[in-house]
Amino acid sequence: MGGCGCQAEVKTAEAGRTLRIALALNAAMFVVELIGGLIGESSGLIADSLDMLADASAYGIAIAAVSRGALFKVRAATISGTILLILGLGTCLAVIGRAITGSEPESLIMAVLATPALIVNTIVLRLLSKHREGEVHLRATWIFTRADVVANVAVLFAALLVFLTDSRYPDLVVGFGIGAYVTREALEILRDASRERSALRNGSG
Image 1 (cartoon, rainbow, N blue to C red):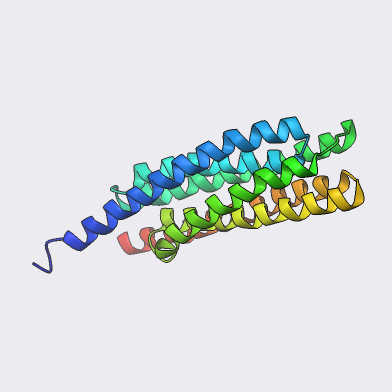
Image 2 (spheres, rainbow, N blue to C red):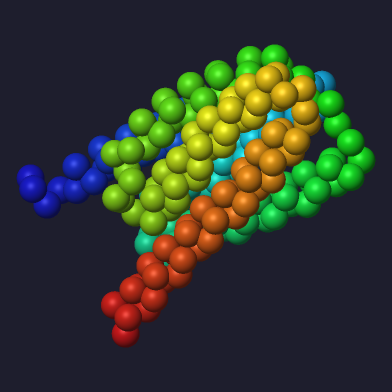
């Protein structure tokens, strides 16, 4: 019975369930944070919402890869990392644009929306933690969920500074910082996928 693959099937099913939960939670928070960010003129919230959208897309890709072969999973991680890289760079450019055109972030809206986002991402990170040393596409989901938690904490900190200083600059700095951090995490995912691809090639060779 040891070679029946039952344990692998259980792990695959468990990973699929975890990713579907993560996808649903991130998709919902993307909508909530984006609307709140636009209403509250918060670069931090908008950046975080776009990060949620990228994560939801990456979770969807990972779901498709769960029961596929090793090469497909490497490709899925590469796509996820590329999406995250584009998002990170785009967020930095968008924040620069807001710094030029002006904004008046609402600290209360930032805090109210960043708090449930942090709770959601902490739950998802906990669910994914058992897969952090697993296959490459699952490692990628853990990495960018970790980035989300950092981003949520940063938005809450920015909300406090905006409230205390009555200045938009903490929000702009945090928005740009989220973009830069997401870019860094994307590069980590891409490097991990590249190493995995090289290992597969060497193994097949």
